[in-house]
Length: 258
Image (cartoon, rainbow, N blue to C red; front, side, top):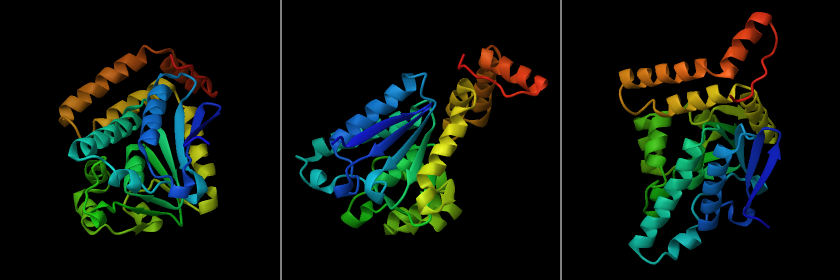
């Protein structure tokens, strides 16, 4: 049985972490596969949005502790971290939006993967946390940076310094979760959200993600200039012209990604 399963549902790709016996922990094989999938989706014009879920009632417990404990010294530990960085970066930099569908636990590296995703749909019974301090470590797979950028530095310090678990309601109220739904509706809601995104103009979604990912980098003037460049390119696209015509003709647009 594959440790990561992929299913195409029209323009939406559903990726399922499939190691339920270890709460969908990430070993190096999972990291390698997820990195490759994110890069592949970025090149695939048939995929317009991606949903990531976990099998067996949990999203992911993060790094595989058994594998972590068997690393041969600091150099291999650093290499594992860099491999995880490539995975998170591939998800974050993929031009197609990623939606995390969270049930059960999303802790440690599991929460870090959620943070690399664009949006997070969580069940009311789900739990979040950057728990690495509890084993004498840090959220080195991107948690220190992406958590602070998502919820603010003060709240990120609270979660990271204490290693405490956070219920879905608190996570939603603090901006860690995008949408909060009953547990049994998580996948349905995540797929519906991804489908709504997939129906938008692909080039506009790609440009929007590019711009939003720069929001904490450079200065405001540089980012606004980047937006002007993006709009200029989009204006020459068939999709934007189709959107304008459809609006004036009072009909749904038909976007083709060009």
